[in-house]
Every structure is written in C-alpha cells, then in structure tokens.
Image 1 (cartoon, rainbow, N blue to C red):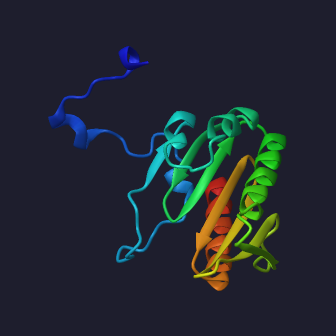
Image 2: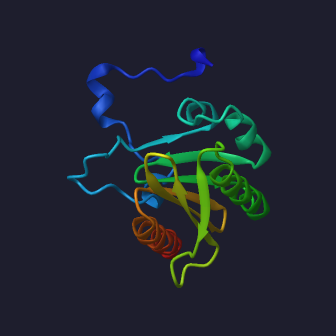
Length: 168
C-alpha cells in the first residue's frame, strides 16, 4: 500500500483538493467559533478504524459495503447500496444503545419532519448527552451532542444537507 501512495512535494500540499469524494459537502459543519470543533476529514475503512473505538470498525465497513466516513460536526457514512445503508443504520443504532451497565440509553422522539431518524438520551453517572442516527438513501449519519435539543436540531440540519446535496 505504501508503494501506491501518491507522493506530494511539501510545497504542493496546499494545492491538494480537500473534498474529492464530496463527503464533507454532506456533513454538518462546526460553527467557526466552536470550542469543540475538530479538523474535518474523510476516511476510507482503514482510516476510519483509527478514530472509532469499536474493534469491529473494519468489519462494519465490509459488512455494509461502506466506502467512506466523513467527520465534522456529524459523522456521515456512505455505502454502495440502499439495503446496506439500512443495515448500517441498524448497526449504528445498536452501538448507540449498547452501552456499559452504568450508562442509561433512553429512546427519544426524532425531530419533526425528519424521516428515518432515531434519537437517544445518554445518561452516565456524571453527565448527560444525546445521539441521533439518520438514514438517507445510501448515507447514514451519526449525530452526537450534549443535549437532546441540540441532537434534534443537528439531525434536522443534517437531513436538510442530505436533501440539498441531492438537488445540486
């Protein structure tokens, strides 16, 4: 693999295209002044495996024909087939729900007008957070925020981004 990696001279790095797979275009962006913002990126299966704590990341990509994962304020996965996206959606929901014994995961309503979304409040002994999963065509998004209201808002925004990308 290293022999096939295209070398780029350091003075040409700034000229490399950023979103060659049009995945970042489909993610919800962090606001410019966000304290918790991370550097947006797109990964294939091997690259994504270094970010996700689950040991079965490579299997997840293979089992569901996922080709890319983009991360910014949301995580967006792309698959090659609608039925594989549906099974990946189910797997993301299962990963959200399957927490340690001291963590409670409570199902919550999805944002109004957003089909194929599932939201959850996650309560630990020291904090509360929220996650939503969204299925759209061959894409699955995972949204993680500090509040349920924030998760619903981000999920609705992610849905609008998916919809707008389809009309471009």
